[in-house]
Image 1 (cartoon, helix red, strand yellow):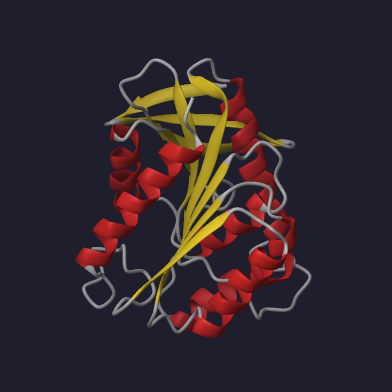
Image 2 (cartoon, one colour):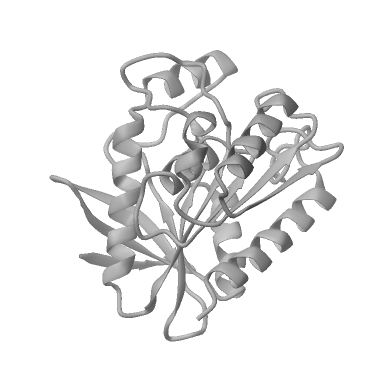
Length: 246
């Protein structure tokens, strides 16, 4: 395993199958702490997620931002059509294998509290966080910020979406959504909630009025909702403290 100090965080590399993938770790003051895998949105690692990782680290969590584009580099996506095509071609199984590799990597670190690893994701990263929470042993908590509940992109690259796998959830979940999100209709949230309840899964859901997709993204004035963003982050930190306490 290779580490290199860069700015506030540490760049790390670890194995996922036969390849090496990358990430960035932001660490709290504590010598040993709970850990998080943070999965960014479709654009990959950016200053926004470094800032969020820093806030999570300040709250006490050793936070690994996962680079799901370690192989090909982050995409350049100019419009929604290119975003949708990129997502349709992105292999779900590969991303989830990288998430699992990140969990296994954190488990091996002496500075991570045993059995106290969670996952946090945003947009498609939130979708992958939900998918991982239904498949990956070793996760003790999941927070999904506006993770899509269905993908509507039938292809060989896609695995069943969260709406179809909610009954197999393996850890406590906090789902944070915007009431005005065109990518996550209210009907999907209600169906997701009903499936979790029917299957006796531990979860909390919150839908923020007046917020749409990407309401945490302060680089997008059209989407950013400061009040919802602050409340959602506070809820996430409280949930993670409760779920990963040791």
